[in-house]
Length: 145
Image 1 (cartoon, one colour):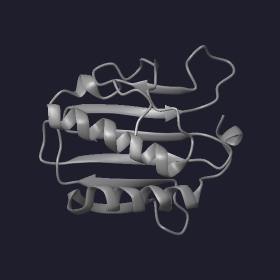
Image 2 (cartoon, rainbow, N blue to C red):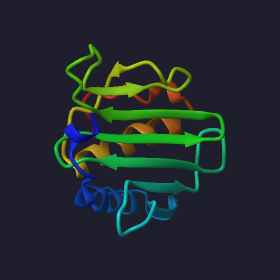
Image 3 (cartoon, rainbow, N blue to C red):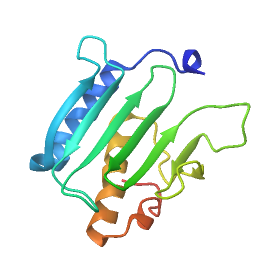
Image 4 (cartoon, rainbow, N blue to C red):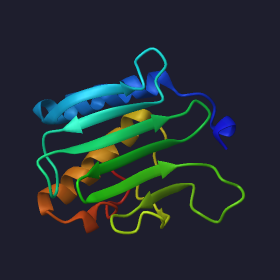
């Protein structure tokens, strides 16, 4: 499956970083390209706020042919929005792995495929759930942002 996705989409990762910084301004503690900025596999965005902890982290991947992964984690909470074309499964291509059940593949409320819009949608879902102090709300939007 990795070869079907294509290589890492460097432009999408830079767009994602820019959107996080512009939208969340002072809440972004640090961004890092993993394993390095020369040959990144993912973008790590550390935030100075979280649901159950004083900080949270998004690990983001984008591929040139199709697909993305926005994996959020903090001490005892994690979830993921993703897009993967998997013809051999019955999982929805755009899916959501909810907190408490990471092996579940629910239909994602995010329908976009452009890095800027997907990032805005992920931030909107996360921020709404964070403000409500209710991670169950993460996938309840109707086609955000």
